Image (tube, rainbow, N blue to C red; front, side):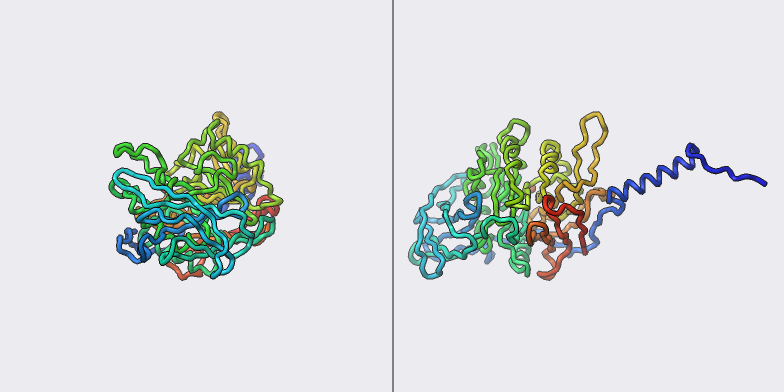
Length: 475
Ligand SMILES: [Fe+2]
C-alpha cells in the first residue's frame, strides 16, 4: 500500500495554501474582498455648453440700478449672522439691508460697504457686502436691498442653535459653471424632495477664466444665475483653481481678485488670516474649509491654523466634522490624478487622529465615493504606502460634477482601486442629511434622473459617537 504523504507545513503546496488562506483572512479582515463599483449608467451624451448671455437665467432685474447677484453666506462662527452681498450696476446706491421677521415689517436695518474692482479692461459694478449680526436662531427673516422702485425682497431661515442632535440638511455642489448642465444640476438640487438648507460649495464657481482675458462679465452672469438659490440659503464657499485668476500676461498678478471681491466669508471669526481657509459651526456640524491653492506646508499660515483648529472641535457640541476642499486626495479618474497628494501627505494623519467624518472635494468633473481608508504609515523606508481600511478615517467624496463647460471626466484608472467604493461619470449634486449625533443620510443625485432618484446612498455613522462600519447602496 502506498502511503500518501501528508503535507508538512514546510512543503511548497502547504506554504501556498497557507498564504492563500492568510490572504483571504486578511482581505476579509480588511473588508476589501469586493472591489469597488464602477457605474454602468449610460448617460445621454451631450456637450456641456455655456448658456448664452441672453438666457433667461442671466436676466438683469428690471429698473435703474436694481440690485442683482444677491447671495448670502454665514457671517460668524456659530450661525447667528449672515453676510448679504449684491451688486448695483449703475451707481453705488444704498448699502443698507432692511430685515425683519414679518414680510411687510422690515423693522431692522444694517449698513454694509460698497466697493468696485478692475480686472484688465473690465470694471465691476458696485459690490455691496453687509454682515447682519445677532439674529435669532431657527427663525425666518425677510430682507430687502435696493431703494424705491427697485427694492428687492428675499428671505432666509437661520439655523437652529448649535447642538449635538440638531437635524440639518446640507446640499453639496461643486464645479458648477454656467452651462445648460449647470442649470439642470441647480434645478435638481432645488427640486430634490429632501430639501437642502445650506449649500456646501466645493469650489470652481463661474469658469469666467476660460473666456478671453478672464472675461469678468461671466462672473456677473454666474451671480445672476445662482441668485435664485444663493439669495435664499447660505452657500458656504471654497476656493477652487478657477478662482485664482492669476494672469500676469494681462497685468493681473494678484491671485483670487474677482473671487475675493465678490464672495466674502467669515474667516476672521475662526481665527484665520485669509478668506481661503476657515471654519463654521452650523447646527450639529463643524465645517472646515481648506485651500488647495494657498500654501499649506509646514509653518505656513494655513498649516498653523489647521493644527490649532482641529483640537478645538468639540464633538459633544458638534458631532459631525466635515471638511471641504477643492482638489481631492483620493481620486481614481485620469484627470487631476494625484494633484491633491502633497496636501494629503501633510494633513491626512490629522484627519484620522481627529476622526473627520467626511471630506468633500470637487475639481474632477465626475462623482466618486471612497471606502473609509487611510494611507499614513509610510515613512520613506518601510514600504507601507498603500491605502488601508481605517474606521477612524473619513469617507472621501468627489462631487465636482456640477456641470461646467469643460465637460465630464470619463476616463478612469483601471482596474478600479479597492479604496474606491463607487464612481460614475455623471453630473449631479448630493445631500448630507444629518439626523442626530449618530446618523446622517447621504444621497447623490444625477441631473438626468427624476428629482427623487438616488443613484448612490450611504447611511453615515458618526465617527465619534457611533464608529461602526457602514454599508452603501448604489444603483
Ligand atoms: Fe477645479
